[in-house]
Length: 94
Image (cartoon, rainbow, N blue to C red; front, side, top):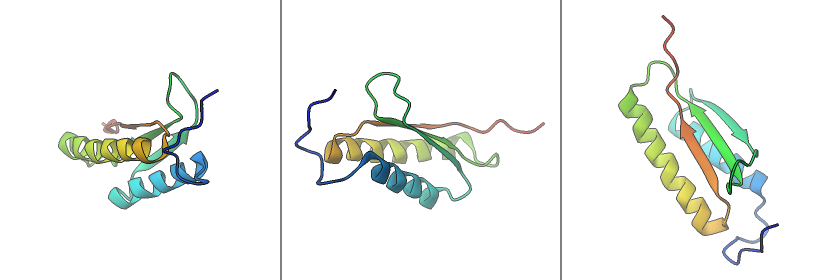
């Protein structure tokens, strides 16, 4: 069990933070598929998997991933919650 983190903002639950994060993803890419899981593999508190539309380029996916990674670090510093984010290029339908 984790020790309380003094950096955690008052009464911000992980569910609330994940909802805000998912809404942030949708602001940046409304067409994206967003999957949020609280499955813990190592020391993270949750994972967010983002799949942009097929039409997105690799560069656009990289840019989105960079923005979401920055947000993840902000959340960690502000709340103490470690949320991993992955942006996956959708396989093209050939």
